Length: 151
Image (cartoon, rainbow, N blue to C red; front, side):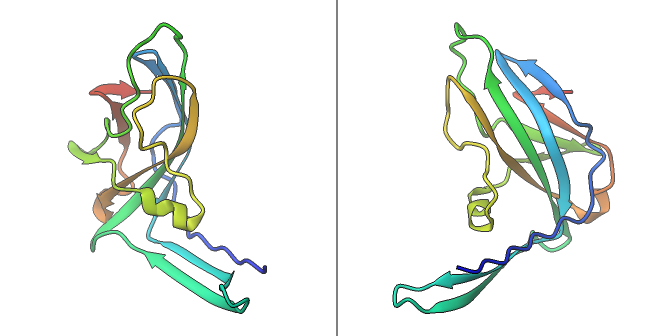
């Protein structure tokens, strides 16, 4: 099957790459980008055996952009009973708070979101998605987990 995959990566944010530990969980930011949209164009084989071109595009709310962070989390303390909360992330930009978006659709664009499950052990790598106003896309940003700054 011939596959063509496009993902528009537009700009990098001023969020620093970091590594930090909070509540027994080690956080490592692997990459970051600002996305105007997600776009996928690929050939799909149908149940009849025919090849059809499929195009999909996902855009943020009008006047907003996506900030996509690839992050790795790892349970460092085997005795730690604190579960990882996948929705406890907040991105602060210019005194405004932005919460993790429902990013399960990223799978359709061959991008793995960070787990949506509350987990207690292991290492997980995936993406976090935030929507911020276009006017703030180049402002410094800080990521928080359970109200604790990750840096």
